[in-house]
Image 1 (cartoon, rainbow, N blue to C red):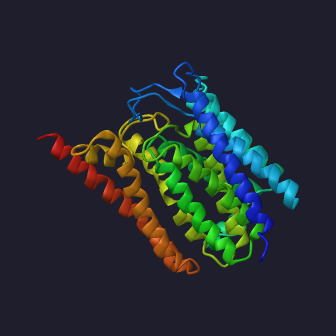
Image 2 (cartoon, rainbow, N blue to C red; image 1 turned 90 degrees about the vertical axis):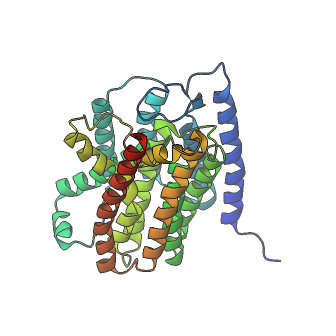
Image 3 (tube, rainbow, N blue to C red; image 1 turned 30 degrees about the vertical axis):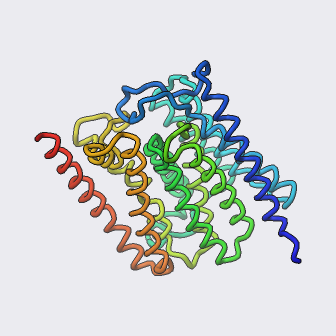
Length: 357
């Protein structure tokens, strides 16, 4: 009988330990006497839950991920300092808010820019190439290249934070992204990086056990910042390791997280609102409101997550077969904003018309 591979043994051990880490963290912060990480602000615009739920998912995730990096170093002598220090710094910035330490959005954004800028330069993190020739020329400038990578991180981190709070929405979405990244990297023999992706999928799957369909925990700002930075790193590494894949396929994978922030920013400007202040008019929120007309809040909450991620999964699955075709990937990427805006205003119009009756 063939012996079990060391990679499978390590990942199995990691999965078991990660589950118990999540279970212990959830039990500790679910106690009625422990309000340290409990979200009890039901009146904020982006709140759609009606009971106190701990925002401890990020804490469990960072502990588990640190444990995995330790196992990776011990068993495979694989050290990834960038993943540890960059994601830890983003986690701590978000975790401060989970601890109810009030930091203004401007100061939080500034802290993110400073830390991201430091680690991008220290570890010489860059995007090797994109399917737009003029950008490749601009990447010869260190200032432009650093700024471009930093902006990418900011969009994905804030996009992850924006959709956290709905049962399964962020967790399912990140699993889908990492699944397709894993498939690409396994196909091209990037084993060490694939193991890193599998570890993240394990953490996210365990999180879903406590978050979907009924939420016992949320990611919190710490968790969404942590996984947003992880996802950004995963995409950059995958793009650099698989040069035969269109960079626009990776853009399609990130479209929802990116465009939620992009569209929200300009929508609020047009509505004379501060782009940095939350509201309840994001796509997932108006879908929730529309579904809630004929359903209870809990079902409408996780139905929203299923609908968005099912549509997203179908798009990226179809595009997977054209992942090495830059022309088709570009075309679809630039059509997606049109589709998004059309769906957004169609649902908003229907919700308003029914609500006015």
